[in-house]
Length: 521
Image (cartoon, rainbow, N blue to C red; front, side, top):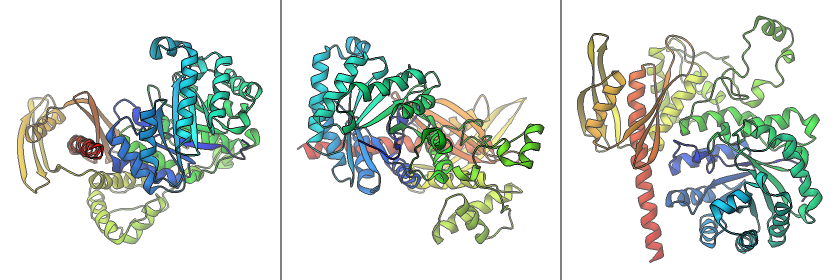
């Protein structure tokens, strides 16, 4: 199947959510899906519909609203999974069922405990069943890069005959190398007679840090769909970072002789949104989207850059969505300046939203001399966190007394969804520990705090700080984030945000389970 571009397949909402410590609400997944649509990805893998009632609802919600890209659900090569995937996808404008099955000897021996002939038949039957529901079917032989090539090629030929329109070659454990992977993909075109009837895709994991290199090598070998996640999220060390793959293709069109349909100016806004919602900060030196990606500190570099930008910059930061600071905001700035700066950052607000944001901006401007673009992004995400998660509690007051010669003590007042305020005082090993214990005294929920991280949004002594907290309950992890110029206040907001998200996700799962049970009756 000839392709005049590389298809970008985003699996942030499926494989990305499998990152340890991740867990999103349906509303958060929908927000990300809307941004992925603006980014211009071709396929959104919205989830694994059969894995949980919550995932089913997320896939169905996204399938109903997001109309331009293909909406896909993962499904094991078993009838129930495939049926469930179609039930979630049936209202999509462009549905795809993505079914998968292990193919490597180590997986067949230790995981599947089935022989090759049985696995081959299961793969064919799964594709046939999926094709009975929709014309767009993808098949993945899991752990393909550790599968005997002759068996892999035979399986690919069989599933294409059964109706697969995309065949995906996953490097499931990040084992291969670029040269080796390029030859494996070339082997498909040489050894599989019907390969041109399908799009060849790859899905590379990053266990050896080679996922992007392997993905680009696969394009050289003839692959025309790349699967990955924003910010390289995913199982273990993650997946190929889509922003890196995309800009690798776009920056080196002279080499790859092909492009994408991506609106690259939406890359940075997409990266920031995903980072904020998942609660995983972006490393400063991350390619394309890291805070230092376009900053020059060496004197030699600065001198050359000022003379000619291209000496040390192979792409313009504006091309991937980095926005400058032509307008500097402060406490005297008005609504027009705020609206212009927010538009620069990709936010288009209604009058009501602008009024609400302006009030929050004024409070922040009283605490900082200058409010930067990054501060505004953090401010907007704080607004979204409040809107996306149905709050059980909001932080009304935080008062802490601490020092090197006294026991840290915190007084916290929370307001619940009925408007009732409750105040508690607690001691801790430090101010944040005391705050969390005071909140525990109000919420009375058996949770364990498993992670606490602080990041500065911008530079300077008055920098806005963002806190990420993860809590665990009954083996499931929930993330929360909060921001403030006061790290202790940010910590309280993050802890309460994590509790609110936990309560909302549990409630959504219970509602989805009840709905499914009612339908079954």
